[in-house]
Image (spheres, one colour):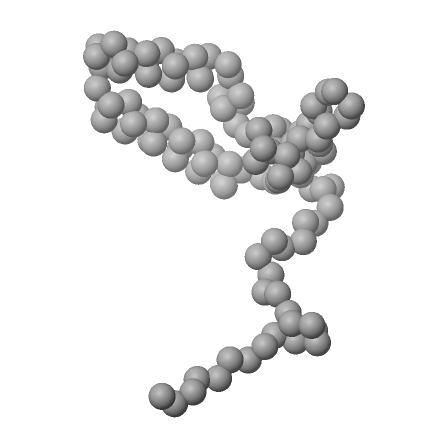
Length: 112
Protein backbone atom coordinates (compact mmCIF):
# COMPACT_ATOMS: atom_id res chain seq x y z
CA UNK A 1 0.00 0.00 0.00
CA UNK A 2 2.90 2.34 0.72
CA UNK A 3 3.98 2.10 -2.91
CA UNK A 4 0.47 3.07 -4.06
CA UNK A 5 0.62 6.17 -1.84
CA UNK A 6 4.14 7.06 -3.03
CA UNK A 7 3.11 6.76 -6.66
CA UNK A 8 0.06 8.97 -6.10
CA UNK A 9 -2.52 6.28 -6.80
CA UNK A 10 -4.04 6.45 -3.31
CA UNK A 11 -4.59 9.37 -0.95
CA UNK A 12 -5.79 9.72 2.62
CA UNK A 13 -8.90 11.77 3.38
CA UNK A 14 -9.18 11.83 7.15
CA UNK A 15 -9.50 8.20 8.20
CA UNK A 16 -10.46 7.05 4.72
CA UNK A 17 -8.26 5.92 1.86
CA UNK A 18 -9.40 7.00 -1.60
CA UNK A 19 -8.19 6.35 -5.11
CA UNK A 20 -6.80 9.47 -6.81
CA UNK A 21 -7.63 10.37 -10.42
CA UNK A 22 -4.41 8.56 -11.38
CA UNK A 23 -5.57 5.51 -9.41
CA UNK A 24 -8.93 5.48 -11.17
CA UNK A 25 -7.12 5.92 -14.49
CA UNK A 26 -4.97 2.90 -13.78
CA UNK A 27 -7.99 0.79 -12.83
CA UNK A 28 -9.75 1.81 -16.05
CA UNK A 29 -6.61 1.02 -18.07
CA UNK A 30 -6.47 -2.58 -16.86
CA UNK A 31 -8.02 -5.31 -18.97
CA UNK A 32 -11.32 -6.45 -17.47
CA UNK A 33 -9.86 -9.87 -16.66
CA UNK A 34 -7.24 -8.26 -14.38
CA UNK A 35 -9.87 -6.74 -12.13
CA UNK A 36 -11.87 -9.92 -11.47
CA UNK A 37 -11.67 -10.99 -7.81
CA UNK A 38 -11.69 -14.65 -8.80
CA UNK A 39 -8.34 -14.17 -10.57
CA UNK A 40 -6.51 -13.69 -7.27
CA UNK A 41 -8.71 -16.31 -5.61
CA UNK A 42 -7.39 -18.87 -8.09
CA UNK A 43 -3.82 -17.86 -7.30
CA UNK A 44 -4.50 -18.16 -3.58
CA UNK A 45 -5.95 -21.65 -4.07
CA UNK A 46 -2.92 -22.73 -6.06
CA UNK A 47 -0.55 -21.29 -3.44
CA UNK A 48 -2.47 -23.18 -0.77
CA UNK A 49 -2.14 -26.39 -2.81
CA UNK A 50 1.61 -25.82 -3.07
CA UNK A 51 1.83 -25.35 0.70
CA UNK A 52 -0.04 -28.64 1.12
CA UNK A 53 2.37 -30.27 -1.38
CA UNK A 54 -0.55 -30.99 -3.75
CA UNK A 55 0.95 -29.04 -6.67
CA UNK A 56 4.36 -27.86 -7.87
CA UNK A 57 5.81 -24.37 -8.01
CA UNK A 58 7.11 -24.33 -11.59
CA UNK A 59 3.81 -25.03 -13.40
CA UNK A 60 2.11 -22.32 -11.30
CA UNK A 61 4.81 -19.74 -12.05
CA UNK A 62 4.97 -20.64 -15.73
CA UNK A 63 1.23 -20.18 -16.15
CA UNK A 64 1.25 -16.98 -14.07
CA UNK A 65 4.11 -15.44 -16.08
CA UNK A 66 2.38 -16.33 -19.33
CA UNK A 67 -0.92 -14.84 -18.18
CA UNK A 68 0.73 -11.62 -16.95
CA UNK A 69 2.68 -11.23 -20.20
CA UNK A 70 -0.57 -11.63 -22.12
CA UNK A 71 -2.29 -8.98 -19.99
CA UNK A 72 0.63 -6.57 -20.39
CA UNK A 73 0.63 -7.06 -24.16
CA UNK A 74 -3.10 -6.34 -24.22
CA UNK A 75 -2.51 -3.07 -22.34
CA UNK A 76 0.43 -2.07 -24.58
CA UNK A 77 -1.48 -2.71 -27.80
CA UNK A 78 -4.76 -1.19 -26.68
CA UNK A 79 -5.80 2.45 -26.98
CA UNK A 80 -4.97 4.92 -24.22
CA UNK A 81 -8.05 4.96 -21.96
CA UNK A 82 -9.90 8.26 -21.68
CA UNK A 83 -9.33 8.21 -17.91
CA UNK A 84 -5.56 8.51 -18.46
CA UNK A 85 -5.64 11.18 -21.17
CA UNK A 86 -6.60 14.04 -18.88
CA UNK A 87 -4.11 13.31 -16.11
CA UNK A 88 -1.50 15.98 -15.40
CA UNK A 89 2.06 15.12 -16.40
CA UNK A 90 4.20 13.93 -13.51
CA UNK A 91 7.71 15.35 -13.20
CA UNK A 92 10.41 12.77 -13.74
CA UNK A 93 11.70 11.34 -10.48
CA UNK A 94 14.85 10.24 -12.24
CA UNK A 95 16.08 13.61 -13.50
CA UNK A 96 19.74 14.35 -12.88
CA UNK A 97 20.32 16.60 -9.90
CA UNK A 98 22.24 19.80 -10.38
CA UNK A 99 24.72 21.46 -8.06
CA UNK A 100 24.11 24.69 -6.09
CA UNK A 101 24.96 26.81 -9.12
CA UNK A 102 22.23 25.13 -11.18
CA UNK A 103 24.67 23.14 -13.29
CA UNK A 104 25.90 19.60 -12.98
CA UNK A 105 29.34 19.32 -11.50
CA UNK A 106 32.01 17.93 -13.78
CA UNK A 107 34.36 15.40 -12.36
CA UNK A 108 37.82 15.28 -13.74
CA UNK A 109 40.08 12.29 -13.57
CA UNK A 110 43.36 12.95 -11.84
CA UNK A 111 46.60 11.26 -12.69
CA UNK A 112 47.88 9.01 -9.95
